Image (tube, rainbow, N blue to C red; front, top):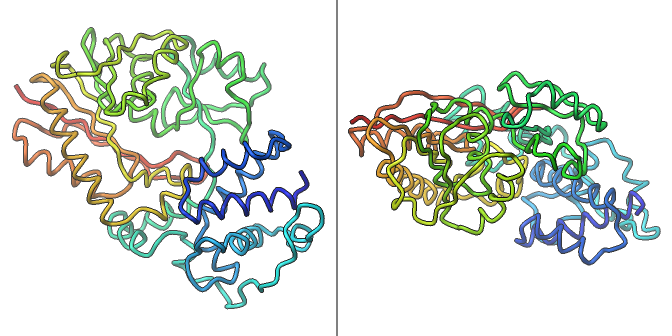
Length: 392
């Protein structure tokens, strides 16, 4: 595909996303209908779509739109995003071959971009984060406009970070230690096809953000004990904890199909994780990891359409779910045991406010440790952890 054809394909995918389709589904639908597209073409189209979604508000403004874009506006949005990046639109919007037709609407001539537009978030989110984070809010929002770096977690059950760096070098991948946590390696650039590497097949690493790895590193030990990952999903936290602990690790998720690949991943990593349909029947546990469903605001650059679809009503629904999961975790942990309450959110209402509410509801709980990070350009995503201890 030519560069122009890739832009046209991205326009078509973005139209579906602006119409309400999830970005990943829209990309998959396009790829299945476009067998002619090679891996580099698919990667380029994906990058165009995700770059535009991360900067949707400023791209629309630059593209000459007076409002947030809707279905039918993808052409102007892509043009606006590409213009922000210094692309030569005259060479991309030519109408030749499969390239988009020349632009028939002018880009913005309204002068300097308003500061709030440049933050690329809805007004209510900007206001809430400025209230929550103070002077750090704008830098966090700026980071969420960028592509996140690729991090690997060295699997301590099979290797060390230093040996993994050497192995990756042999495989042609440049990796560097990240200071946030000993297991985190940041890759140079954005290499593709990592899952085909022999080091991955040998179980030496998993893809996992440095901040996510740090959450697990800050959890208490449970020597010889039993630890439950209550909202396991694909099992990333359970795998990371099992790799650094001799505790028996269990996993549960309300949607059991999310854990379908966990037994295979655990076998590859050389650790044992038991998936439970009814954790109450196996309790109590020495520790419970409660990686609760949340807004995902700390990692919006990985799923950027979520930033535009979140509403205040949905945020309130999420906090109710988070309270319910914390209450369940309290019942599942033994007296003297711990709960690791964690999110990939940077909203206070999902983090400190939920912990304070839990401490009010459960007098036997105390907050033992807090740790958090904000999204950084060329750094980790945003996360929160509070370790709660249940007194006997």
